[in-house]
Amino acid sequence: MRNLVHRPRRLRQSPGLRNLVRETRLDAHDFVLPLFVSEKIENRRAIESMPGVAQLSLGEIADEAQRALDLGLQAVILFGIPREKDEHASGAYAEDGVVQQALVAIKSKCPQLVVITDVCLCEYMSHGHCGVTRMDGDHFHVLNDETVALLTKTAVSHARAGADMVAPSDMMDGRIGAIREALDGGGFHDTGILSYAAKFASSFYGPFRDAAESPPQFGDRHSYQMDVANAEEALREVALDIEEGADIVMVKPALPYLDVLWRVRERFGKPTAVYHVSGEYAMVKAAAEKGYLDERAAVLEIMTSLKRAGADIIVTYWARQLVEWIR
Ligand SMILES: [Zn+2]
Image (cartoon, rainbow, N blue to C red; front, side, top):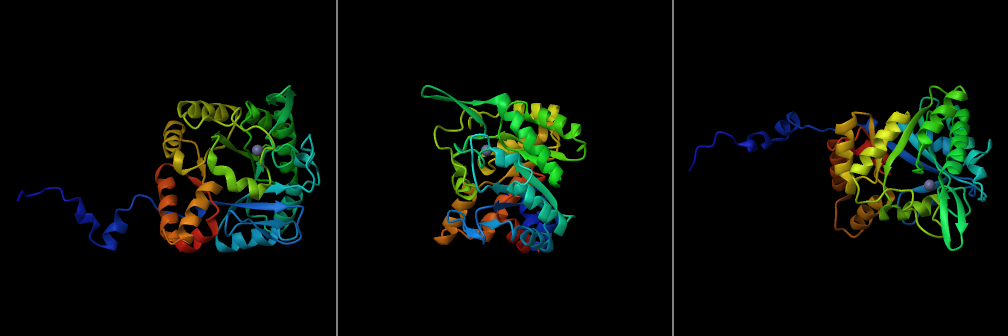
């Protein structure tokens, strides 16, 4: 038998020793809870593909935000479902739009809660794409600069209604710079930008589209969201957004893109967020329902992995449970 000098197992012998040398710890302040507010409902409506997640009415949203705060969460990200959609996404930037109304309600009830708003057009466009489209025969185009103009209006209207940060999720070119300029021009120097900087054209968004009622009516999103195969391009996208004024950069989805998350955090050292998306959530939920996985253990492992890979902020549908599990 060799006499081993190094026995790494020495530090794994007891819970106390393992606690002493643990490198990554989850904290309630790591998490951001997504909330869906709908103008079309009076009472909460469960989302079938995302057990435990519901759309909330405008009458319920402030109480739900307060509950999140009471639990120990400090930030939410808000998605809106308007009563009507049209070809100009006018609900996205209407003074009395669903997100704008929800912001006013939340901010008057719990001003200390950090409210981030998703800025995109897909929930408000009758065709469900994230931008203005033009048809050329059978071919459709999502027009970049025309879309950025509407996103800019949307972001400013969210700031006016009380958003702490706006979070553009559309993946148009140049939108961060345009939004920064418009916010500053409107006197909103302190409204931050959390950029969905590397958002991939992922198959894991399916259940979200039920939640946000935003599936595209034709075509797909591959001309604006990123190719899942590209990591170098993700770094270029992130660099552009930082140059244009992003305060926080986000990678989406989470678990299949840990390498991208790690590289973004290492390369730029900016506050880095990750969005653990609906499909990733639904996978674990379904497996847990069948008894194939222990939900709590699996979720804690996933969240720890995301933080270990460099996430400062994790957007997750488990935010409420995580706070309790960690406690
Ligand atoms: Zn969108």
